[in-house]
Image (cartoon, rainbow over all chains, first blue to last red; front, side, top):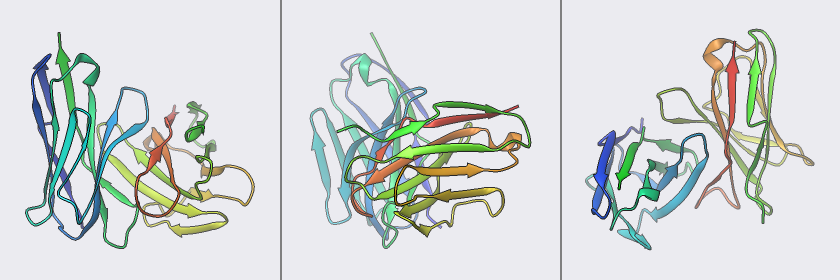
Length: 113
Length: 113
C-alpha cells in the first residue's frame, strides 16, 4: 500500500527566501507525481506534474524534482512571496492506477512580509 | 472554459438525512473522480467514473455511499442516512483521460449535525 509523507508539516519563512518542500513515498512503482496547492476553503490547483520517466519539471518560480528509486520528490520555490502562502500537497499516481492518487497530508506554508 | 463545478459548496444535514453532491466536469472531460478530505487528514480517493460506468469504487465505504455519472447531466455522489463522521470536504476532479493532470473543483463541504 502506497504511503506518502510530507515534511515539514508547517513552515514559516520571510519573504524572498528560497525554500524546499519534501515528499517521500514508499512504493517506487509510480506512474506520475503531482504537486498541488490548496488555499483555505478552496479546491486544489495543479502546480506541476512529473511523469515517472522524468526527473524534473519547472514552471516559473517553481521546480519539482523526482527521484523514483529513492522514493522522493522536492518542490523548490524561489524568491517566496506572501501570495505563496497555502498548503502544498504531493500526490502519487500508481502504475496502472491512473488518476487514483495517493495524497500526502501537506505542508502548510506561510510567507511573511 | 469553465472549470470543474461543484454544488452545493456548503451543505448542512441532520443525522439520518440524505446528502447529494453534484459535479460537472470540465468541458471535454469524460473522466470524473471523487475524493474526500476528512478534518486533519489528507485527501482520500473514493471513486472513479466515466459516463454511465463506475470504473473503480475501491475507496467508497461499503454502505450508504453511491455515485453515478449519467449520460446527461452532472456526476452525483449520494450519501444516505448521514452520520457525523461523514462531515468532510468532498472534492470532484476531472481529466480528459485516465492519466495526466487532474483538475479539481472547489469542493462541497458537508456538515452533519
